[in-house]
Amino acid sequence: QVRLVESGGGLVQAGGSLRLSCVSSGIIFSFRIKSMSWYRQAPGKQRDLVAASTSGGNTNYADSVQGRFTISRDNAKNTVFLQMNSLKPEDTAVYYCNAQTHSGTDYWGQGTQVTVSS
Image 1 (cartoon, rainbow, N blue to C red):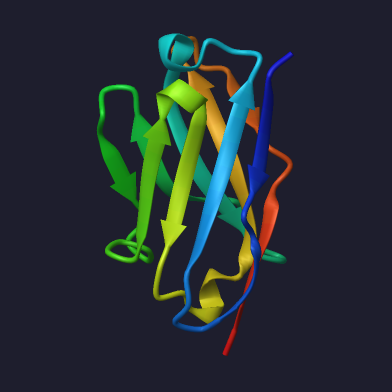
Image 2: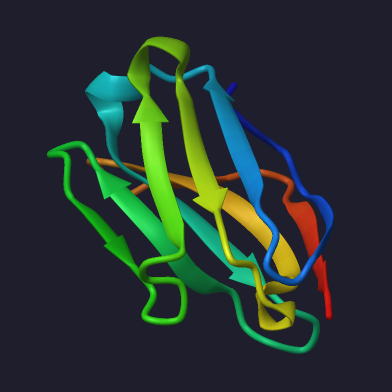
């Protein structure tokens, strides 16, 4: 059974930092996974891509977080991270970890709440 478990969310003041972690289990992490990504969903809004890391080593970011957020992977620990700096109130959302296999299957974590106060 595939499982993704996020952690690291919380309440932080604007300008602060948080580091999210997503540990995966039940899959051969580096062999089957095409990409690991972070998405977020604010109340009443759709779920949007924040950052992605492909198996080829490429990364891409939403324009709104470019230069502030960094996605990284530790394949040995089946973990993907999202370092979030210079947080803004508009970054407030539930953040979800996503793993996509080469066959196109998506797996999701349960989400972790990030709240940025002004």
